[in-house]
Image (cartoon, rainbow, N blue to C red; front, side, top):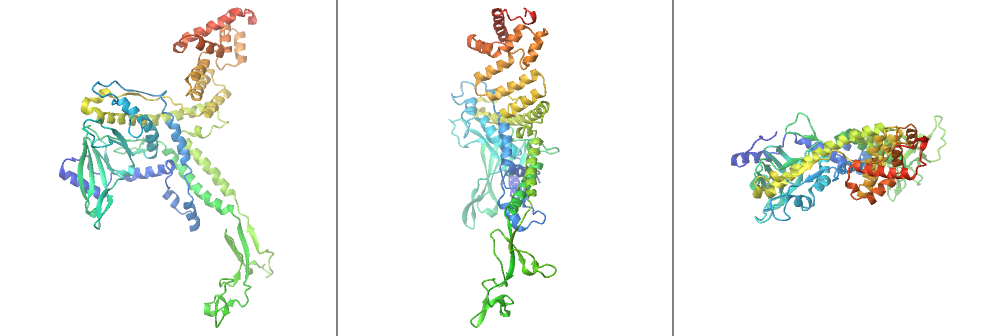
Length: 595
């Protein structure tokens, strides 16, 4: 049962009642649901042990096979999750978003402004945006109900130093109570020193309660079994809301406070099955890869070996005045060879025909085992992983089939962009709150209304996350499908941006080759036909035929060519084309001597 929504933590009676509520192992109403979802996602993203997913026995599964499956389990979907995370991480490209920090008042010391802190001096990481993409993104996808709790790195910051706020990440299983407008209560992994049987041990619980005005620590002290807690206000921030950010994802309907499902949750039905089948495949593979030896069991050949009443019917031999178990047959009366890979024993009487004639049996042979099931499982596992990618609109990243048309690939990409946009919006929302809380902790005491000094963040709306290989495949499919040259132009620009993203000079040149060509991606045959029919001018034809030469000439010979408008650039290239036309009057195709 959840705690009361609003608690006056300054009221001793209410605080004591709340501590008693925590001591009774109470949690918020959706605690189990959020923790289970985090574990299910973390199996694939962090490679955690799958627990119940694999611990259930299969029908007719021997204990030794079950134990073997569990001992060799591997997180095969972790690498697939990493591909998703790496793809989304490409959103972190300054070409697609901007953060503009306002100039801060002169009373803020040099090097202590918000921009410097967030871009160079963010604790432990340097840049807060890189932290969000490299730490926050993975945490969001693995555990969308986990939080960023913003607080000073130290609570005893001297008055002559600026506070250094940092976003501490806490898992769903640590968030024992939450009411967004009132408080978040977090059980730390850190432990306090308590006594157990007159011995001091680090086993006491520590809770941090983030309220709308304070951060309070509840620390267990004294005898562990007496559940005595000391309360201490660590800092008073007077923000008016708890400085805590839930990472977020897809909102689960009919929940309040809201809980979230991971943006990657669509993979679960498929990748869970892939893990189960992989575990089965491993066991089946071992069962089928080693030959199983069959041996004929025959009567013990040790002289005097026979059943002995004094050995309770076991086979034995006379020794002195008594007898002992036969060492040759271990008291069974029969002998056979042994194999380290397991033996199927066939007794002599079982190797007889119905007419009591001995069957033709060499004594040792090997059983042929079917291997089809292993191949079927392997094929199905790959298909399940593909289905997981498709469920989150990322199947285009896993394979670009040659049988897909350019239109289909373009649709796939639009679905991918929509998926990336939802993740990007959540990430940048979290980032905005993180910077807001950082700003408050650092400057509210000095600036008062610090909101005037928050940065302006332009979020990305376009995403260049596809690999060169995939973009080339999309471009090839679009050309094969006969799509509009204008659409192909845009796809080529995408490829140029990806291929030359780190070389601005080459990126600009190749973009100009496409953008300033009046007949870009029109075939030579079509160009000639249009010229013959009067559909284009000679100047257009010459420009298109010499676009690379003309662009290179303009870049090298015209000042500020890169700062000109497109119209101005085209005018310069048309001038080059007219110049060439005048120098070659014999160029008089079909008798047309005009433009």
